[in-house]
Length: 154
Image (cartoon, rainbow, N blue to C red; front, top):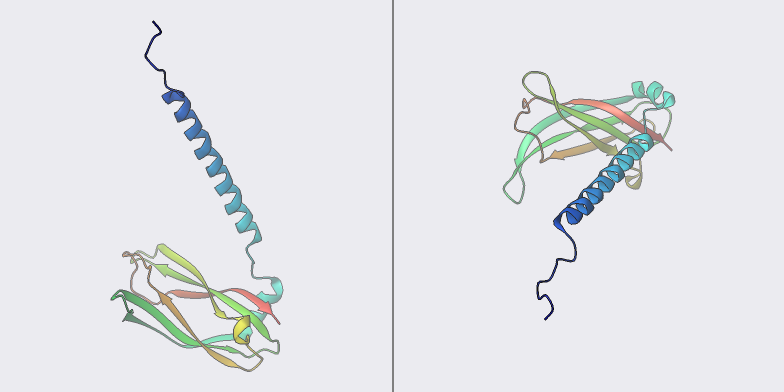
């Protein structure tokens, strides 16, 4: 009579080895994607650096509001003025949040001038609104540092 015991198709060690290989491949893919994205991220060009002096943020205020879900949202509103002679398609800023010890807790890159909304003409002023619902508990509740991160000219 034949042995009625059946052997597993794959042993536990083989399954574990396959899982480790898949995880390693995923990690390599993620790291390659992250470095590719960082390499392709726009930077403040020398042309843009010299133009920054023509951009003015004014009437910048911060408040806390409640959204429709009852969550607290920190909102920063203000105006940006283009006192230079070039049309701007896009302006992005870094909002840099710190804790009470002056340590960076969050840096968000946000667009305050958009091409699809007409950009920003020379001499023009446009309002901006930046809602944040993901601020860390350790944030010091102070106005974040607002730094021009990118300018795209029209």
